[in-house]
Length: 465
Image (cartoon, rainbow, N blue to C red):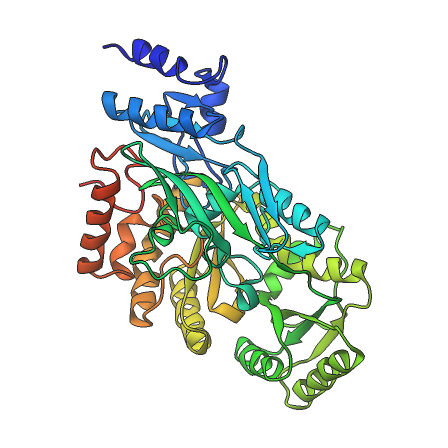
């Protein structure tokens, strides 16, 4: 059967006009935010119902066609890239909030619901959806679940998996499973829901998710503190955690701040130049809490851990302080950064960063390195910026050499080669630095159960054999 006949059959499974094969659509839907792999899908299909998703998966099994899920395509690991003629299953039209339960504080979402849409819905109900990151205005809930998205509030609220009450999934065999049924307590064997969270679409597709909400935070307040070196950030974190329930604790380097300020639309937090900056957030629900924060700041200054700082006094100032951190990824994207998303336990962070910084500095003395990350949960983002005179291919080839050295350090510290961006294609060859051969064998066996024909996002997480 020719490819055109196979695609014609696919068109009968969805609504008219919901299969695209034009070059512009193939390019747009065949890639994510990574720039490593040129997109080359054979078609884009837009299901609108669960029945249609099941029909697509069964069609793919009959014809041995590989499927790649597509949400907001904001991923940074290549997990949503279709580079080998796959059919992209895009969930843009499964984008409705289906139900809300005010007593259980749960929302039933289709996978194409945009993260910001869920956040706004929660706010309209006087509640809060706390998983937040720079791409929340375009990322989709299905993709968040597929990558177990983290972001800036993990220190208080955890990852996406903490907020998934239940899932409906279509497996690689086309079966529909309803997992956990939104229960808080459910001690009936294996929690298959958790297998699909972070699986990057390699086991099946999320077609419906019940998400938990929380109470809305009260009077969120941010502080930006400048430190004399990176080592000072950790005692600052310890001091504030001992006094306040932090909702966030981020860091960024002076090079990152310089790039932000060069935009011209974000004011400097204060006049003192510092090598590193910490941004922390808490609920100043009472005057006593605010006073405790100021007293802790003064203590940190007395100890020499902080050189200068500022505390937000309004919502506008709160937003401006957060822009110093949240705009970083978008701002440095203009320099085509080579990115690494790595993590260790929080106590190991200073030594871990020093070791990696030394390796990068030794082998890439002429490259600008920008550090930032979620220091409160041990997650560091290493960004090496491309010099203007280098081509993208030459730059990535040069930087790829550092991966082995960086990941050897990650392995030595018992860390993760991917804290929150997933494995996809960019990290699959390095999975062994974070997972043992026995673990990887178990993971492959699990995939074979749910996807025996290997049609679900092949080539992601595991290197092709």
